[in-house]
Image (cartoon, rainbow, N blue to C red):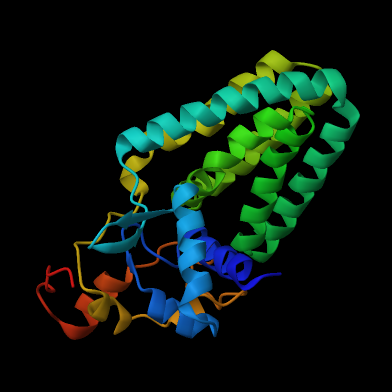
Length: 265
C-alpha cells in the first residue's frame, strides 16, 4: 500500500466515522505528524478526497471536511435511490441467489454488531448490504456512479443513525427488504428501499451542525490527532457512541468560555 493510499484511507475513515466534524479545518502538517509521514502523500490524499466530495479545498483559506447543505443531502439521497432501485431489479434478474446470500450475510453481521454494540461493525455491514445490491447488478457503470458519492452519503448516514431507535428502524428495513426479495416481491422491496434511503431527508435536524469557523490552532489544541487517525478508534467516534459532543462544544464546556474566536487562521 502506498503512503498516499494509506493517508486517503485513514482520513476517509475518520471523516465517515464522525471522528472529524463537518466543516472542521484540516492541517496537512498535523495530519502528517499523526500518520508518521511527510506532507506530500497527505496533500495528494486530500486532493483525492476532494474529488470524492469529502473535503473542500478553498484557495488561500485552507482545507476543510465537507459540510453538506440540505440540498446536498436531498440530491445525494435521490441519486443513491435511483441507482440502487435499478440495481435491485437487475440483480434479481441476473443473480438472485447470490444477492440474497450476500444480504443474509450482511444481516447476520448487523445482528452480531447490535448484540455487542459494535457500531463500526454495524456500519461496515450496512455498507456491505447496499454494495452487494450494486455489485450483483453486474453493471460496472452503476457501481462506478454509486462510488462517486458513497463516502459522503455514508458519513451522513452514520451521523443520522446515532439517534435513539433509528438504528433499530434501519435494521428492520434491511431485514424486510431481504424477506420480500426472497419472496420475489421486488416492487414491494423497492418501496422499503425508498423509505430507507430517503429517511435522511427528514432527519436533517439530527445531523451535527457545522462548527463556527475557528483557527487550526484552536482545533489542534483540543484534538488528539493520533487517536483520530488510528486504524481502530478507541471509542470517540460517532459510530462508537450514541450522543457525542463536537470537540469545540467540549472545549467550551471544559473551559467555561462563552464563545471561541471566529478568526480563521
